[in-house]
Image (tube, rainbow, N blue to C red; front, top):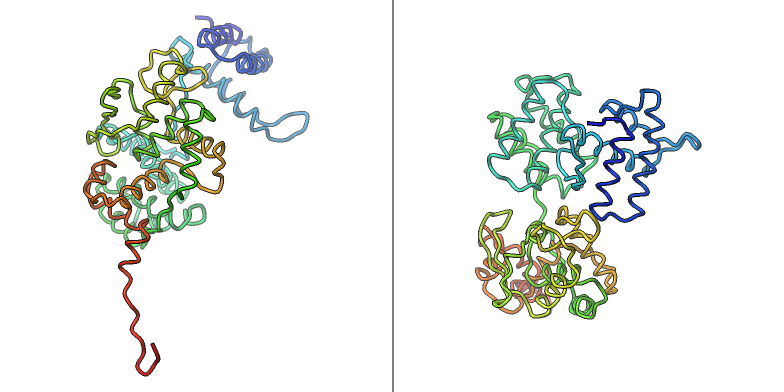
Length: 403
């Protein structure tokens, strides 16, 4: 196998062309390969992971002396592809997945503990987003212990848990700390250290129950019109209508497969990623029409059987919930709805509120949204202003005052 920068670079460019990448993207790769070739000249042009690490660390432009985010992205992306080529003997252009990020412990014992937690989460078949959240807070705590000179969990105490959570308060909103503690508690229970679990409870972080926002009728009408009129692509329209009319979570939209759609019955059958429960959702005529437009005319030719694919090469499924967010945000922007913080969470709440206002019973709403527990639907009562007003009690008048 040719392990020179020139040899690997030629293989990468050939694979990019075969995968249908745009000329501009290939040109950017070639520009970075040329820079790596010059960097490797002093080492006989042979590529190694250590050489790649040094190259990727060159994030400052020599001419200006300033940090370049573009250089960091381009250099890091190429080194990732080159390293994978050395490991596997082939060019792997698959999109990098989130997860495994953030700080990591260095000591062997704490690193082994983090790896054991990762293996445990795999055995539990937790959703990727859940594993990512649980893993990040676990690694952050273990790295925090190392910063305090603790190299073994046996030497940690409850005070370290409270100090760790206190260190997060400067970077996390108070309303978000509840979820951090919830994710952290799962790892602490895995360690079997009940004293650390109890310490997390002593932090006194409370869950915030804010009244959930919903779309006004005018905004919803503008979004539907944009999806129906062709103002946005058929893929983006279908994704937005799916979230708007069914309340599906972003992870379930990303994982939706072609075989799950019953075109005649106008339904989609899925197994929810979060609860692992089966769910059948009805599809409106407009949604079915935009889906058909996408699948028949606009969907890239790809062996990937996920419904929604990347519009540029590689034509694989969308990466994660962030992809869905940006699609919906763009649809809202083109529809002229710019004063709303969009996303599937908002549209999920909006779908629930519409059903609630139509006097649909809560158990039915729970079934439509695919909640693991009917009690989860109680939260959506907060969006029904009329019913909330019915619960308001009259304030008694003080004695001697006039009515």
